[in-house]
Image (spheres, rainbow, N blue to C red):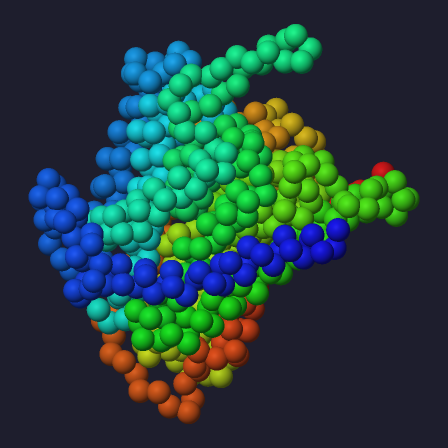
Length: 559
């Protein structure tokens, strides 16, 4: 059993380590505006796209880049909303599903365009095949392409290069990264047992002479971009606990690797694009250590299960299997949970509502920090935010004006950073208090666990994660509207502010390094960076965590 646990941890992370360096090199090449060999391969398709939509101008200002990003996403949001509302009148609706209610259609469209994939409907019984393919899968490509484009624009700005053009970056993210990889991965998932068909559900005869309706559909292509794009939404209500979305150990391993691959490769691409390769490696190592810490805490918590029962000798040695698939067990479930919340994917192969209080605490902290690799693009933008905070705090301690990549961090940047740091606490704590006070009837569990359910839902929405405790009656006008608004603000406000910060730094002159310069490519900076993440990030939410999962854990000893 111990060997199995170590293997569940080691194998996916070793695979990521093997793949992350070439992936980082490829990302740097894919978004390089200078001629590269990739232009010959992808150039014809991109020129066709530009011929249809018009060739964009290069080198937008950060404001133009931000406006383009918001406008394109708004149009896609509106198109998806119409598909969800009208799916009852559209083809490829073998189950005869009606159109979604306005509030649910709004929530679902916002959820997928922001990369959250927070679902208040059950996948197979909520959307037709057309809605799944034309709206959901379409947005699953658009959302990570948007955030990847924004991250690359920030990296260019920090490298003293022109910001680029959003439309060019969006097209490159799709044609050079997401579409070709998702095509190959869809074939792999189908080979592993995931169905890919437009045929309707089938009715099977059970061994006790009953009948069972078995849903199916174009699942293989769905799962490929779901995992590669750190989207996380489920074709089925059970998400990656469903055998058609996650057939076995190999598919589970592949999903863990895919959730981490692009987010983990971006720091290395950043180091290559800025000419500060060692700094990129330091950030990668720091985030990797934080992830291992989260994985270890979740494994320990789920193997311990209920400490009161363990103390009395009433719990099985392998830990708590409540809410977990027998084919995955405690180890694979805990690793998957840590990775899906750290990478802001949101796919689940276990029921998070049944995690131990400490297990739920770890998942919550992963989302609230949103810097342990995080989602594609947006996660690394948050990492850069905390890196600047780290050098600012270090500068305060030694009485020196802080510098980041040779640029002075001054009042304007710190004001924007302070606003960005306040967004997540406001988006999580204020609506959670409102929900507990005015909509307690929608929360299934009383006391500490009920508070955690509400906080988890809004933390998942604000961090664009999408996983849920699923103990809420969340398909209501309040939850659909409130989490929809939180997802939009949690997605776009930080991206726009971080674009502004990067643009502000890009116009500053380089400051020559001296003996007093705090280098960002050393182990010391890695330690300060981790400390900044834990102190500024985690302690912000300590009071509500103490009232929720921590208090629930302590209460177990009183039963």
